[in-house]
Image 1: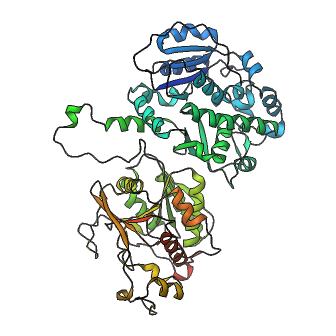
Image 2: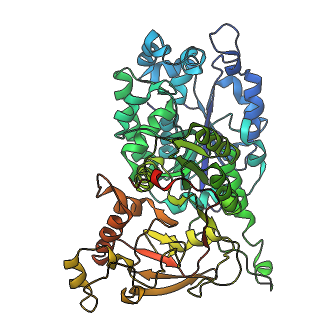
Image 3: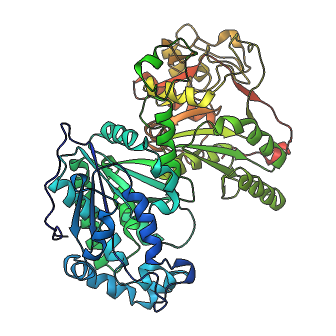
Length: 590
């Protein structure tokens, strides 16, 4: 899309330092408040509503480039000053002329097969308003044009929807989030910041057929959607992502597929993940929690050097990134709602210590009554309820690995429903501390700081502990003799004195929590994983029927070759406890 025409701007008042961040936005009256269109009543917005929300965005103390029509200029100048504001002319007529996909959008809007994909679609803005998609689909091009023009000599540019204050007014009014957003964008270098939210249901996404979208996205199933209301980065990040976006937009429209700009951004983010940095939102897709997270991060910083040097209790250590990445938590359960209730209550406090989190219940239950009760429990705790029949324990673990890989989340925690967060004082049988305050934030910080693929959360487990190398039990006899010449054979039982010790290469600590790194064996006990670690452990090699013992032996070999970095906490905060049992013959592994 060519750069739209521009008005003659007053010469800016230059400051001694260039602003690091410029906001880009656009507002046109598309007729969304008119009663003479086919919009559903709940989709109508009067333009006076838009102006009220827009005024709150205009109050943000950042340089701003605004694409709009001339009739809005007096309104803008009542809220802005020329030294940090540029108005670029944009009209409905220029959209029709400059947006290269305008005719394709009109053709798809008129296609009854497209409109009838879902009951809500005919009354949606993308179907009812001729200029809605041409405008929202132009966002990446407008952002790129502004970055190229660079009127304020900025380092980063961010798109904010003109109506974003509709759900984020109080957050926008806080003057601390812009600096935190600048820090985050600086840390991303040449990746584009995007927000995404889970989107698991339906046969279409914003009008784009889900099966076709999965094909274009080069994935089996689209599980998350990129938000279009806030995204940005450096000029190189904007240009690289924008080029792929435009190519994908042109190709999908030509092929007869259309959703909104979010559909296209989602496809590009799936196909070119190295170009993007994703922050996961909740299922409702609201942006306000992300801005709240920025505000909260700013609140944790010392107000001045003087206050930061006063003697006081040391605050909790932040994660070693500007913004904590999204964590997906998966709880595997089977025909035991009371057990699920116990584990959810046990982890409730820890899960709420992390704002960017999505909870999943993987329900293997075969009893419909249990499935219904588990669904109710999941809704109570804000969890996504996933049910695909009885996959088994390890089959469910493999499902979780696949689901996490497609989710867009950065880290993952896997729990079986009898793995509780311990509240017991004292030490375990290995002499390690039991109760661990702020377990997940501190463990995540260790995972990142130590550059691990996975971090086990309990030194002592049910059958044994991590000071002994339990992979010794599960490798072949030949490998056992080669790897442990002094322990070449094993008995039929579990003779603990025969198991060789685990080789650790490093002991460390962070925020008062100690950990060990080395040839840590895999087990199904709770652990944190990165996306890369998940792929190395479960996706690069697959088994038709996976078992815990198979994974343990295979991943031990990978760690020996330096292909996998594992660690374990020098603490035992996991309590293995069942309150509801099922018949042993119902248990399957995979």
